[in-house]
Each structure stands twice: as structure tokens, then as C-alpha cells.
Image (tube, rainbow, N blue to C red; front, side, top):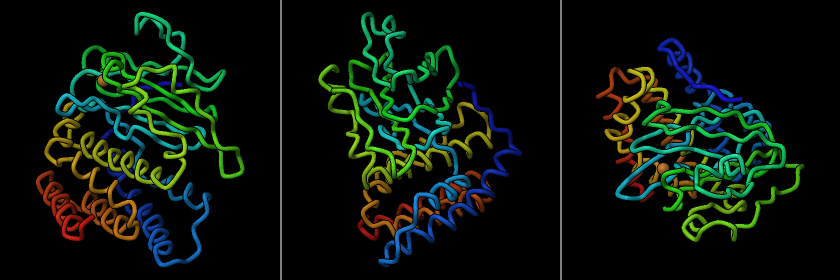
Length: 283
Ligand SMILES: [Cu+2]
């Protein structure tokens, strides 16, 4: 199931109100964990997730470096993922033999048997700036960017049906070029502690996405990313994932800032303040 996502101003307002509620739950859970209290269950994680911003994978170009941001993501069955072009021209395309023509040869199958393949089209050139796909099949879904495959622009989304299921198995990396092997996150990375930082990166992109779509559609996403130095924000947050209580607190304030910001300049100022605080705490 594939559709173009369009957020109206009204949806934006509703969604940001939801963010505030969701963050209270998640932030509280993380604080408890930081203090050595019982770890929240996957169920609670899922309930909290319902109120969070959408998961958005950025398609990025920075200094000759082409990448999906985040490169890995763990989701539950039925999750919509938005692929958002944040500069240059990119695609998000499943590794599936149907798309062999896009790479001038054979493309190996690297999504689960029977899963629906997807191809965004050329975002930023012919098919708009964003593409949405609903992931239903359990397992490892590998994908690539057509124009930047040679630079190793690949990503991995794992659909995980819960803690009682076996660890997902990826197809061998040896069938991919070296550059792609280097950028593909390991299953263990996505399923382990680092997966949490991928999740936050996708949610934070989701915030930027909502803000951008609330202001003006399309090109505003690029402006939001540029002006808020999202790259730096994400890097700092990912690095902070080892200190989760601080990460949760900072993220709470960042998202509160999004909800309460008077205008775009105010939002940027609030974002800068959170980043400065993270830096001051050596995160
Ligand atoms: Cu690309």
C-alpha cells in the first residue's frame, strides 16, 4: 500500500498536541529506566508510539555524502514510513528483481519473500519530495537509492512483530558492492540499544516534517533542515543515546518547544537552546 502523504494545517495542530502527550509517557519511562526501575514493556512502547510524530527517513546529501537518515529502523507491522527528500535527487527503492532495470542489471531480492516491493520514483525531480510506504511483512527490508547506489546509499528497515519472535535474518551482504556493505547497518545494531537512537532520529525528522508541512508544503522541509542544523541535532541526540535520561529530558524540551513556539524563528531559537544544553553536558 503506497500513498502520497499530505498534512494540512489542521492535522499539524492535532499532531503536535499528540506529541506533547506522547512525550510525557515516553520521557517518563526513560527516566525510570535511568534510575534502575523496572524497564517498560514493549507494549507500553507501542502505546506511547501512537502519539509520537511519524517516522520519517530523510534522503540526504551533505558534502558529497549520500545517505538515508537514519540508515536503519525497527518498526512494528503495519507502520507507515515516510521517505522525505531533503536535498538533491534520490529514490527509496526495495531490493527486488522487478527493479533490475533501475540499476542496469539484476537486483537481488533483499525483502521478505512475498512482501510488496516499493519504488518511490525520482524524488526531487519527477515524483515530488516525499513517498510513503506501509510495511506489513515481518522481516528485513533492504532498499537503495538509484542514483547513489554506487556511493553505497542503502538502508534497512526491520519489521519486528514482537519480543517472542525469532531474531530477523538478513540476506548475505556479500552480494552487494563494498560501498553498500559499509553503509548497511547490521541487524544486531538495529535490534539492539543503538536502534533506539535510530528511532529518535526518525521521530525527530517527523517533527521537522510536521513543522515544515504546517508552515508551507514541500520546499519548507529543506528550509527547516538547513536552518535548524538538523544534521548536528541528530548527531548529538544519537551520541546521547547512551545517556538516556538526559536524552529524554532534552527531547522533551525540544518537542515542547515545537508545540509552544510562537513562530518559526522562535522554534529555531528553542532548538538552538536545547543543542547548547546538550553540548554543555558533553553529550
Ligand atoms: Cu540518493
